[in-house]
Every structure is written in C-alpha cells, then in structure tokens.
Length: 122
Image 1: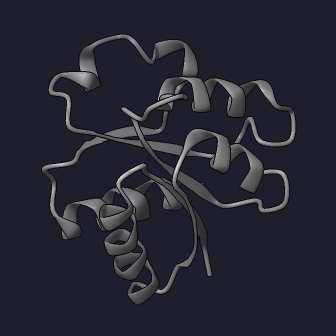
Image 2: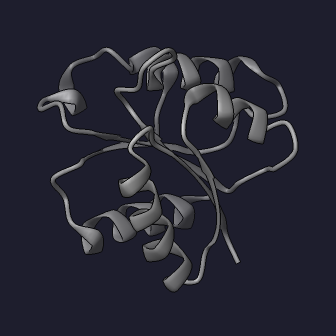
Image 3: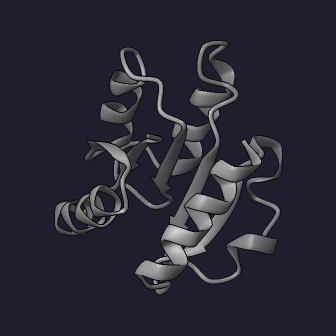
C-alpha cells in the first residue's frame, strides 16, 4: 500500500482528498500547513507528497525546497496542486524538480490518475 502525504491549508479540501485516496487504497497522512508537513516528514516516509502551491506562512515552493534540501526526503516524489493557471510552464519550479503539477479544477479521476502515474514511475 502506497503512502501519501496530503498538504493543504483548506481543511475541507484536505478531508475530501483524504477520503478519495483512502477509498482508492492508499495510506494517507495529512498536514494543514507547510510547517506541519515538514514535521510529519520527520517520522513518516510517504511514497508521494501532494502539495498545495499557495498556502499562508510557508508556500508549497518553500516546502518543496526544504524537502529537496534534506538528504532523508530529497527523493520523495512531489505533485503540486494549484489554482493558478500556467504553472506547468512558468519555470518557477524548475530548480525544485516537482514530479508534476495538476490544477485544482481537475476532478477526482484526474487527480487519482496523476498520483498513480507518478508512483508507477517510482
């Protein structure tokens, strides 16, 4: 069973995604902030981090930067979820090497498929 860390400051969205992934057979961990995500990564090694791009205090870019700087977590695949258009080609994330970017407008099937595709690359 693959483990996923879901990171989103929108608690309603976080609970919804948690149900989607649990029903799809994943072991799910959640974090409501970038800081919580980094604390979770001290004790849990997920197979993928699904990371909200825009969060208060510490945005997704900073979280991914810290994940990539840490020897223990640098190779964990990360998928950004964003409501901002054009992130795939913006070049903003090039140095951080996310494994993908998916729009928040994408529905459940597209999100589950994006995660499955990244985990298959493994």
